[in-house]
Length: 171
Image 1: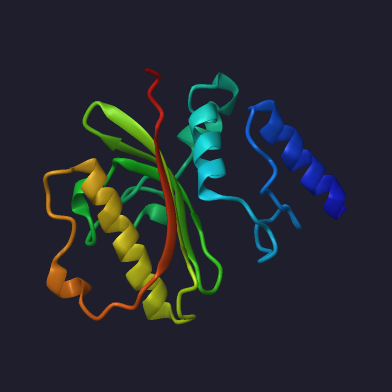
Image 2 (image 1 turned 90 degrees about the vertical axis):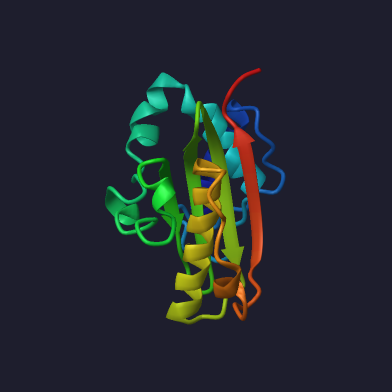
């Protein structure tokens, strides 16, 4: 049932000491537009599970940018400096392009969540948003390479984004 799914999500998040007040779960598939979770909540969860041994299969099973799964063709042309340095889960509904996972940068690994929402519902808008996300992560992975060609960015439609970048390192 809908309330059972939401209760399960809330119980899991509470076990990680995460705030559940803004979580709304209408279905467990993630395909409902009524589901709600903040980028910060997802990023905090990624940080918490990173070093928990029982979640290693989840973390290690994430697709790797430019190498495997749903990210096999990502980053190769848009941000070659990030190939092999991003492992993440995609999320796509019409009008959105989302990516959450981990990006390596030098001796650090960061948890990240990027939610691009309210995109025009066209294939090209989604592709442009994914390319921008790739370039952002390429910049984090290799910070001294230019983020993107400003000439390419001119004329691109505005995209509402929410992003969180959280260090998974402990102080």
